[in-house]
Image (cartoon, rainbow over all chains, first blue to last red; front, side):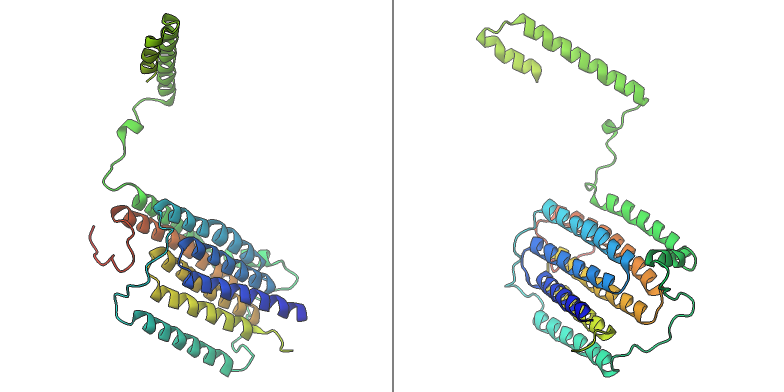
Length: 226
Length: 102
């Protein structure tokens, strides 16, 4: 029990420090790294509560893919510089936001702490967590029976997201570049490329044999190379 | 020493959610706003897993799985939109993007 408590407190401190870092730090790269700290902390809390599969997914998908995607976009756009904080276009926006945050926290803490330490509600009758069954088996069983329709819809959603991302991030206005996709079979194209390379090689060799390099002609060699 | 029960996890999740929501309302860089949304989603995931354990029901963890999938899709499309906007104008922040036309 004592070890559990120690782990929880340490992880909670990491989570809170990380999330505070996401909000307070001014450099987007630092924000992303703070987010990783929070995500790892939440993964540890998942493990502590027996959700082993979700902990693995948390690390792989969130820390491994989503944060890396954030970092890629930060680097791509070059926005890794501090954000100006002097301007506040809506008057009192920051104050109002902090007041709203305190209100949310107060409300949820009141709701949580007023009922005492027990979770009310009905325990599961259909999908109980059986101690003898590994977590991933139980989760798979429920995913592929009760929620199989939602699971299939998920794959549609991911496909739509990928297509949408490609459409959005292509350069605006440019249709598909036809020169990039010429007519003909792959074998023809490879043959044509090979022929062109051979011709070029011959030209180079000719040029090389022609001038046993007096100085003026070295330049023509370079031009031919171009 | 106090015993570790569900309330601790729920309070922590409420705190992370609050920090995320305040960040979403105060920050102006759209990327950082997305990170704050991720924080809020993670807080909710933690709540789901906690209740899943407390009520002995694996369905809570199944829902967390779906939340993660939707979060991944949301980030992909959102970052695509941000890249498309940033190409047109350098250094835009959320306050400058007030027109719904290209």
